[in-house]
Amino acid sequence: MQLRALIEGLPVTIVRGDPDRGGVVWICDLTDDSRTAVPGSLYIARRGHAQDGREYVQAALECGTVAVLTDDEHLEMPERSEAVVLFTDDVPGVTGRLAERFYGEPSSKLALVGVTGTNGKTTVAHLVHQILNHAGERCGLIGTVEIDDGRETARAVLTTPPAVELSRTMARMLENGCVACVMETSSHALDQQRAGALAFDVGVFTNLTGDHLDYHGDLETYARAKKRLFDRLGPSGVSIVNIDDPRGESMAGPNPLRCGLNNAAADWHATIEDESLSGLKLTIRGPEYELCARVPLIGAFNAMNTLEAVAAADAVLKRLGHEPGTRRAAMEHALPRAHAPAGRLQRVSETGDPAVFVDFAHTDDALGSSLAALKRLVPAGGKLRVVFGCGGLKDTTKRPRMGRIAASLADVVIVTSDNPRTESPSHIISQVIEGIDPTDRARTTIHVDREPAIREAIMQADPRDVILIAGKGHETVQELPDGQGGVVHRSFDDRVVAKEILREARLRRADAGTSTAGALR
Image (cartoon, rainbow, N blue to C red; front, side, top):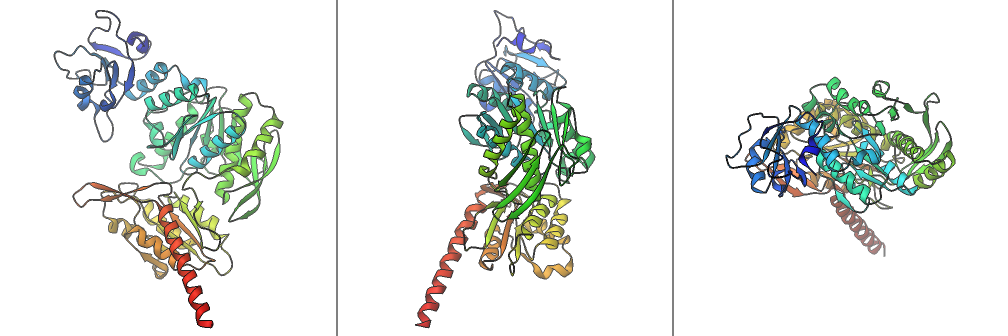
């Protein structure tokens, strides 16, 4: 694409070089990572929280970069460089607009759903993705666990990728036949304008509780970041909000659809008819139809996640021309076949085992919701056991709150490490313990190492017990301090570890049964 055409009408000034020298300057790629620059790249020298892109301009130039975007009018460049320097005082905002323009405005050609909130984003996004694909409308997915471009699925690195990657991925979705895309939209991404140039059609607000205050500073700032998603919606956009959350009404943008449990006044409302360790039976009523379906998800919070996913998928199908009867049929077909995202209250045990669930819950609200959901389903005579920790270099205010909620709901509490990163694991654990009432500490065990914590929970459990292993969910790596101020990564997957220990426990029970039978002879 011609550089002149790429920047036309944008708040960008050419401060060095002649883009028309000896002919037109062509841009063949955009990147904010010097390691991926190629001949013909426009390198975005973005200042991040951890690194400053200006420091890597030389490396980008050596790879063939022909233009540099910066917010430094006096950016130092090699004397012999012929690269054009572009100045803007809004690098994040301009980056998104450049990316959309370079890739052909892909977000405006897809029915784009953005899902934001503290908890539930991943589950809602995955459910919308599944419903639309079951309905025969190919839908892409961008989220915490994975990215599906309509042809291939890859593991995600960030909840919401950088702006260039977002537009590039959506362009690939279009090439692969997608007509829709659902993406998790984090508060960090909204604050940093990663999604600032995208043309959203539907916005979903799940809930807002204390998290990421290490970044945002306070809850009001955090809420304002979330609100930006709904401010991005155009006049024909649809806002889907959880009005059971105190912030729901204030989040609503254009054409709001309010969702509530047991709330007939809501536009979309759901009633839990039955629940068990195998799932929920829901009656869902919307503006144009009613349906009843079994969903293999657990807990009232997942009833709300399902309700919002149905409302969002319905809005997309309606936009794509589906009649109410067709939309209802799509829901009834998809919901019983739905599955939770990896590590979202995912059952890893077999029949005869204690029921073991792995969950990504890493806030007090999410941990409390998962424990409350499981507590109602513990068989008579069983106990609810929880294994959890808190991440290092993250919001420290939630640590005692997580300890408090765990002790108030679980019968047995095991506090361990999550991803301590460069922090002392013992120090993190001590902050968690501060939130546990001294009278509850007799039911609390500490294991700094996560594997022995999971082992104790499973090996000491009765088959009637229910065990929640919380915090890491789908993650397959644990980030530990290396003792020198850095981080070492080790392979660690709660699901794999739990399954191995459950297998060992089954063998022990079998051996014990054989020994008992032999003694009785």
